[in-house]
Length: 260
Image: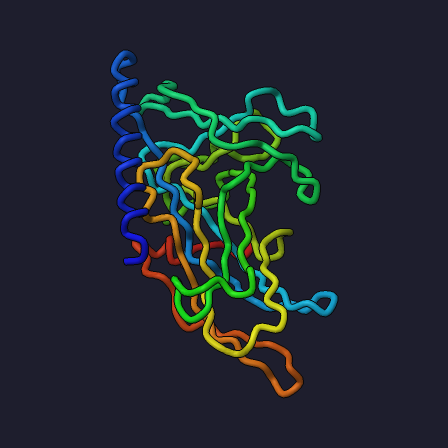
């Protein structure tokens, strides 16, 4: 396994976080219900030619398969769109009582989407030869998201209705059993692969890439798609999906993801 020391340290941190919040919960007679952030296998890969650039576009989903919601709020009311705001993660118990809160990131107003995003949600990379291969041509993008309950991961959920439905309120998040999906037509769902030679590539997507958000397991956040890139006689690129990362469920494989 690549970088076992990093993964081991992440696992220790996750266990430590669980113990810490469990101790803090004692006074409120509740146990911390931590989220678990999982990347759905990227979907709808396609190459678009834009202003003489070759753009790889794709749909990306982040699921919560943990015990509690991934729940975020700004420190102050989000009224001034020119200023960033601290993003505070709230940890709840099984009864919805607040156990702990911590500043983990920032809210930033996304002008193209006209709503508030949270920094550091996901990392997109194009790697060459294998999922652990070198990042091709600097094709690495750390991106922001607005977090909402978009669709149910397996067609059902512990939370039957949407708790987080928009990006303009006091809270953003993903409920247990739900996915936030960004469609391939959305601004930012892309990487520039102009001039890439024919060969084998992997689109690798990782949720919580810096480990800044508190969750149950930091070692299961990555999913990938392998594709062959070929070029026609006129030089235009074509891609063919050939493999994907292992999945724990049909939903994490993207089988029920909408093509919105």
